[in-house]
Length: 104
Image 1 (cartoon, rainbow, N blue to C red):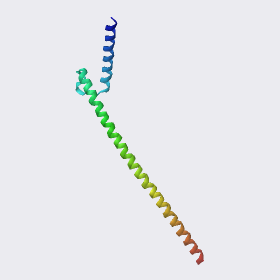
Image 2 (cartoon, rainbow, N blue to C red; image 1 turned 90 degrees about the vertical axis):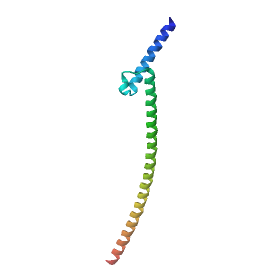
Image 3 (cartoon, helix red, strand yellow; image 1 turned 120 degrees about the vertical axis):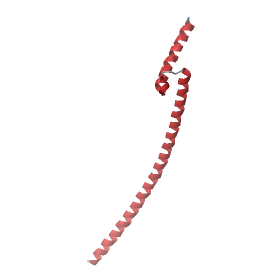
Image 4 (cartoon, one colour; image 1 turned 60 degrees about the vertical axis):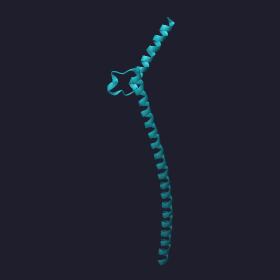
């Protein structure tokens, strides 16, 4: 009797898991009529598709991080050049003001 109860509860558990799986896997037109095998096959294909999407997303993230580092370096370079240009400009203007004072 115990074996029959265990077997029954296992089947109920399996049915519950399959129902949950049906909610997670896009079944398309075959949603009404599916076998356990077709549901599991669709689940496997769906998982593979999600893994592919994840791989592509990770690749894109790496690409964007590389691009960000490159742009950051360019920005730092531009900042240093601007400081240099500003210092040249300020030394030129101070020289000019010195010569202006000499004329008065």
